[in-house]
Length: 116
Image 1 (cartoon, rainbow, N blue to C red):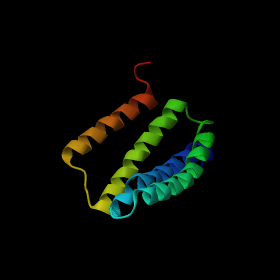
Image 2 (cartoon, rainbow, N blue to C red):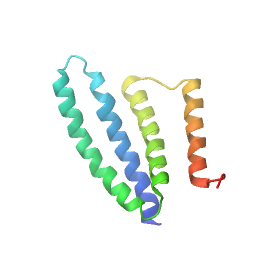
Image 3 (tube, rainbow, N blue to C red):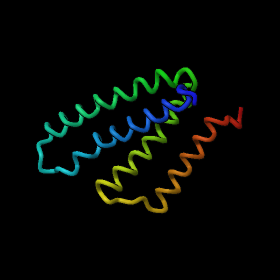
Image 4 (cartoon, rainbow, N blue to C red):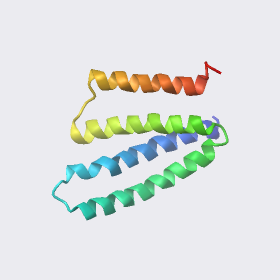
């Protein structure tokens, strides 16, 4: 197994799941002070960076920057879906799934470069 090929994907998946928790998790506690939500979110984001930075360092050995960004965005959407579903019981509708599918199609263009 090629570490430089798969590690960035796993690290970016973890990074984006954690970051989505930082972005949206505080919404489960609307009565808490905003300053506390910001402080906790920043703490979570610090951990997220400990996954994202190595993901990009390792990934840059195998992927272009555009490919790394595309992986990150796709993982961000998957992390968002997990947080929305598991924490807020919000499942994606047909329009959201079509939109995410179009984003996946865009990812295909980045990786396959069919237009040169």
